Image 1 (cartoon, rainbow, N blue to C red):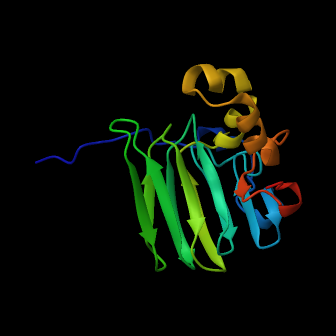
Image 2: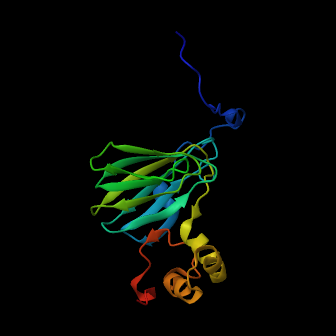
Image 3: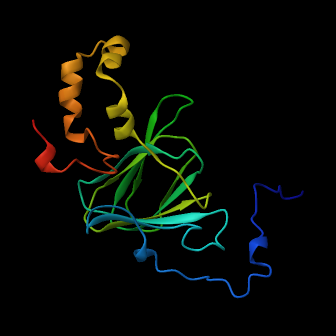
Length: 192
């Protein structure tokens, strides 16, 4: 029986003739997004290390009660590896519309998110740290809060029979942001 060959394997041809490439980087030098010092993500992509083709990594740190907001990646799958603390990784399966939650409650547990599947990460303890691996060296994220706030209130009324004033009021704490990214929204913006 032969072992099946799967997927694309990068060959680092970009290194040929390049002299001695930079093969080291301090991930803490590249903040991906930050709510505060305890709720922050760092990233290492091919922007920081050009020789790192085909993959990237994020170091996500969360405090209890904080959440990496619902989002999806248009060009990469994601593998979440728990380093410390506890987290729930929830995934919306677009095939059957069910939400599955994986409880990562000890270091070494992982959760895999297929490309394009909405997901979110909730910290269940302080000092929660996950390493997020992506199979694209320039992964992209679409934040659910951006989608929610860019849809005109009238569309909510026409599509779901939600009063435009009520949806506007409900979305007010996140209006005008480029995404909540790490929620909940800051208290000073919460009006109810």
